Length: 367
Image (cartoon, rainbow, N blue to C red; front, side, top):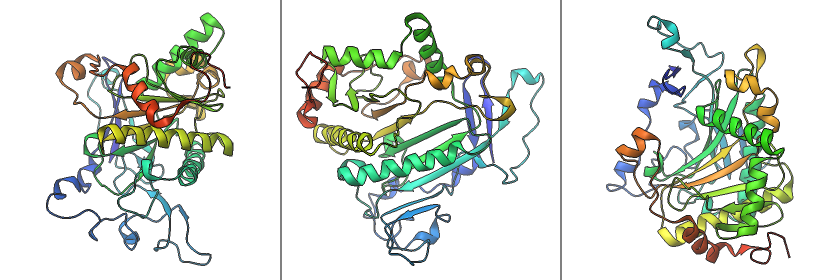
C-alpha cells in the first residue's frame, strides 16, 4: 500500500510505501559473491523475475516478448513507491482529528524501471554517445506516457548509482516515478521562476546560463544546445547542473541534435567524475515542470495560483549529484548544506575531461 502524507509544518509531502520493505538489496552480499553471478533479476535470462515489459529494444523481429536478446527493457517496478491507478489500493487509514493537521492523499501514480543495458557491469558513463542518446529517447517516450496518465501531476526520471545514492541492485538501470502531488521543491522552484519573470521579464535559468557562460569560472562544458556548470551554491561536492539552451518545461528534448549533445555532455561529465573519484555513488535527476490534471488542477494551491505560468516559465534541467559525503544532523535538521569542495575548483578539474566550452573563455559565445 502507498499513501501520501503532508507535514503541516513544512508543506512537504512524504510517500509512505510499505510494500518497498521487501525489495532485494544486493550490496550487502557483494563481499560474499561476485556481481552478475546469475542471481540478478535484471540480467538476460531472468526476465520472468520482473513484471511484464512495456518497452524492449534490440530483439530480432518476431522474437517473443519478455525473453533475452534485448539491449534495453522498461517495465513497472515490482516494488513501486506509488500504486498504479485503478489497481484497487487498500483503503487509507482514518486520519486523526482535526483532519487539516493530518493531510493525506492516495498514493496513486506510476513507477517504472528502465534497464538500459544487458551488461551487468555497465553504467551511464560507459555508454557511447549513440547508446546514451537512445536511452534518453526512451526516457522521453516514457515521460510522455506518464504525463498522459490521468491524475499524474509530477514526473521524475532519475538514476541511483551506488549504495550511497540509494541503489539496491548493481545492474545499471534508471527509474521513473509519477505522483499525484508535486513535491515542495518543485513548487518552490516554480514560485522562484515566476518571481524572477515578474521582476525581470525573463527566465531565471536563461539568465543564469548566460551569466555563467560569460563568467566561465564554473563552466564544466557548453555548446550550442547545452550548458553544464558547477552551481554557484552546490549542495553536493562536485555537483553538476545541465541546462538546455532552448527554454522549455522538459529537458528531454525530442530534437535528435539536442539529444545527441546532451548524451555527449552528460557522458563526459560522468566519466570526468569517475576519473577523479573512481566508481563513486551518484544520482542523476531530471527536473520537469509540474502539470495540471482534471478538476484538481496542479494538486497544490500555490501552483494553482500560478496557473499556466507554472509550466510556461519553467526551464527544464538535469542534476548530477555525487554522494561523496553523508548527510549529518545539521544538514538534515536545518536544510542547510555544507559543501567541502569549491565549485570553481571542481569545474576546472572536470573541464580537463569534458574539453570545456566550445567558445573562447569569457565570451559566452561560440567560436
